[in-house]
Structures are given as structure tokens and as C-alpha cells.
Image 1 (cartoon, rainbow, N blue to C red):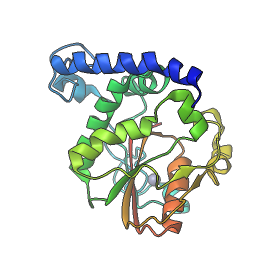
Image 2 (spheres, rainbow, N blue to C red):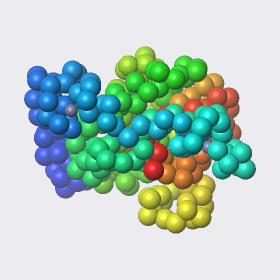
Image 3 (cartoon, rainbow, N blue to C red):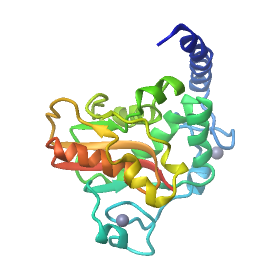
Image 4 (tube, rainbow, N blue to C red):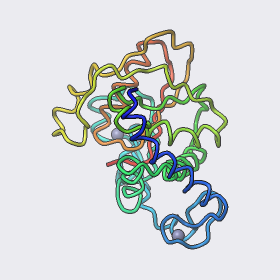
Length: 240
Ligand SMILES: [Zn+2]
Ligand SMILES: [Zn+2]
């Protein structure tokens, strides 16, 4: 990393450490400012979050009732099943945008706590490792952190599962999926990921912040399967 870039990153990291310390000394609800425990969102705000109540048993999309959605029946995803507790809607979308575009790393901690809580409530099988969806090195230098990794850290701590951060690499710097029409999303990420070495693991959980069409996690899961993973779950905070 060149010196200019490193200097640009410093104030943001400093600010985050300061915010984190202040918040840990007296935790308040991130959404209403009221009293909260160390998980950071008060019970009233927690109850108001845009929860997905009847998810597709495969991809986690919101359904009217139990079962598997038409999309998954027509084209089963490469992963076994996805846990996505919330819709990409207020106020969770604001936490994700605050994390990704304003570097509020404290939000990653909260989003991770929310995700860990949802996963713990519906976990069918404990994975051997958690794999955050990687950013391309160019994007990582720009942003200074990978939001999927930051969200995965508290999840890993709560569930006692290690993070494997170099098992999957992003080898193509693709435009963000949200900026593309649905039909171009599959091609955009099809060859974007690779598993460079031995996977040496059987059951993995892929973690990300948002799942839109699902093509990104599908592409990561395909790579993991090709490298020998037999059980792949996807844990994302929200579904758009
Ligand atoms: Zn609150
Ligand atoms: Zn589905």
C-alpha cells in the first residue's frame, strides 16, 4: 500500500476505535439512543426490525408460507441453505450503508450480533469455518476493510467457529451487483472467485452483509464445492 493511501485510512480507523471505546463504556441503543446491553440494540427497537418471517427454506427469500421458492426449484443454488434474518430496509439498511460507505465499524459489530443471534436460533449444522465473501484487493485498498469480514468477527466469537479469510479470493474486480440489472448479475460474478490452495474442510458458512439476487454467494459456493466442500451454508444479515 502506498503512503498516501495509508494516511487517508488513518483518521477513519482512529475515529472508529474512539467510537468503539466510548460505546463500550456505556452502551446505548444505536437506533433510539436509549439504554441497551452490549448487543447494542434495545428490546423495543429489536422487535421493530424488518424481520423475514417466512423465508424460503433454501435461499432465505421472503415467502408467504413454508417451503422452497420457485427460483430455487428452477435453479437450485450451489449452497445448501441460507439464513437471512432481515429485509434490506430501514433501519438495517442504514447500518449497512453507514458501515460500508462511512466506515462506522461499530455497526459491523451490531450487524454481526444480529446475524449471530439469528444463526444460533436456526443452526442445523455447525460449520468448520466461516468464510467472509472476499473483496477484490483493489476495492479492499479503497475501502480499508472488508465489511463481510468485520460482520463475521462477532459471529465467529459468539458461535465459537474460526474465520478462514484466505480460502477464497476475489480474482476479478467486478462492478457492485446492486448497480447491474438482474440478468447481468450472474455473468458479472461467474468467474470472480477462486480457491487458490487446499480447502481442507468439509462444512463452511459463507458470510456477507447483503444478498440481492444471490449470484455472489452462489458463485462463492460453487468454488467451494469444486474445491471439495460438502456442506455450504450462507449467512447474510439482509436480503434485498
Ligand atoms: Zn432502541
Ligand atoms: Zn429460494
